Image (cartoon, rainbow, N blue to C red):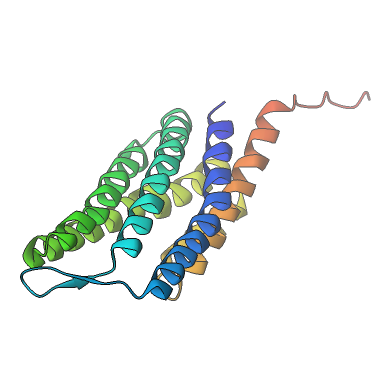
Length: 194
């Protein structure tokens, strides 16, 4: 059952990532066309439409990420002997929330708090990413011998080249979890009669 949870979690990631990315780009583009900016007393200018749109997309992303984390958490806890990848998901989710808390800090004009939330969020997301994706993919490869998990490990480790490698890693993890779930659900064939 654990690989089914992993498959569902990675499928949600594969579908939601491009959708939310392009919705966020569309919202920011539409807001930039409004040309309306508000200046705070400390001189910081921001576009309230862009801020509201980004906050809405980040909130929807948080709900989707919570669903993904819940499925991956259950999958990692039941499949892997090491529980670090499951805890990495928690770091990733907390980092996501910390990162997007920069929106209220920025609209309040507090530059120090904005930088602190961005740095804290990025650090927690990075720690969670290493534990929840790179380490988990490698451990799944060692446990199952499925080459798709090894390819995902390599692509996850190359995320700094471009985030598309991490997205392809999600696709490979989905395919690997699907294969592993299929293997576990199919009974072993009886030996041929001699």
